[in-house]
Image (tube, rainbow over all chains, first blue to last red; front, side):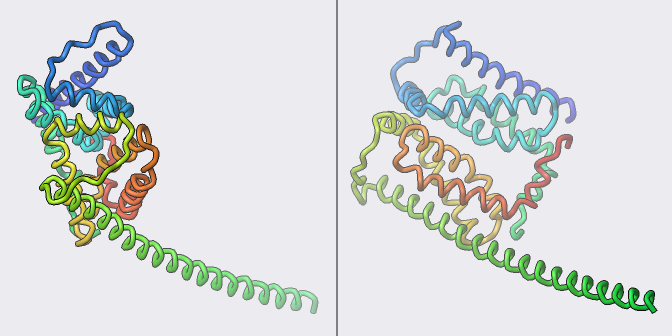
Amino acid sequence: MKIAYTIVRILLGVLFIFSATMLVLMKFGVTSMPEMPDGPMKTFNTGIMASVYLLPLIKITEVSCALAFLTNRYVVLASVVVCPITVNIFLTHAFLAPDGLAVGAFVLFGNLFLAYVNREHYKGLFVPKA
Amino acid sequence: MLTENTTKVCLYQRLKSFTLHLYCIKVYFKLFQLKTIIMKIAYIIVRYLLALYLLVSCVFYVVITAGLMPPPPMEMPPAMITFFAGVTASIYLMPLIKIVEFISVITFVTNRYVALGAVILFPISVNLFLLEASINQKNILSSAFIIVANLFIAYVNREQYKSLFVAKP
C-alpha cells in the first residue's frame, strides 16, 4: 500500500509537471502546437483559449499540487484542490477524445486513490452538523 | 496615621480597579455575544441567498434546455460567445456544473453537510468569478457575490477544514 502510494504520488506529480512544461514550451514557440482535427474537441479548445484566465489557472494549480505530491507535504489538501481538474480531464477525454482515455482515467483514479489513503483526514468534512 | 490612610486609599483603588475589570469583562462578553448573534444571522441570510440564487439559475437552465422557454436575448462580448460554444461542445460540462450547484443548494437549504457543499461549490464560483473578471466585466457583481458568500460560508465552518491542512499525514 505504501509503495503504491509513493508510486502514484510521484507519477501524478511528474505527469502534471510534464504537461505544464509542454504548455510553457508551446507558449514560447520552442515546440509547435499539434494540429487538431476539426470537431468538438477543437471547438472546446478554442472556447478555453477565448477565456484568457482558464489555462493558466489550471496549470498553476496543477504545478502547485504536483510539488505537494513530489515533496509529500500537504498531500491531503493537494488531492482536494486538484480533484475538479482531474474530474474534468477524465470527462473531457471520455466525451471528446476517447483515445486519451487511459491517461485521463489514471489521473482521476490516482487522485482518488491518494484521497482514499488519507481518508481519515476528510472525516471533518463529512459531518452533518457543525 | 499616614500609612493607614494610604492603605485605605490603596484598598479603595484596588477595589475600584477590580470592579472596573469586572465591568470590562461584562461589556466584552456582551459584545462577544452580540458578535456571535450577528454572525449567526448573517450566516443564515447568506446561506439562503446563495441557495436561492443558484437554485434560480439551475431552474432557468433546466427550463431553457428543455425548450419550454426561449433563451433570453443577451449582449455578450465575442470571447464569451466563443467560450460558450466550447462549453456546449463538451456535452458533459454544463450538466455537471448544474448538478454540483444543485447538490450544494440542497446542503445550504437543509443546513446539513454545509462544509462539504461549500467545498464542492468552490471551483465553480472561482471559475465564474474569473470568467466574468477576464472577459465580461459587466456582470461581475453577481459572481463576486457568489464567491464572497461561498468563502464566508467556508469561514464560518473553518473548524471542519482544519484536518485538511496537515503537512505530513
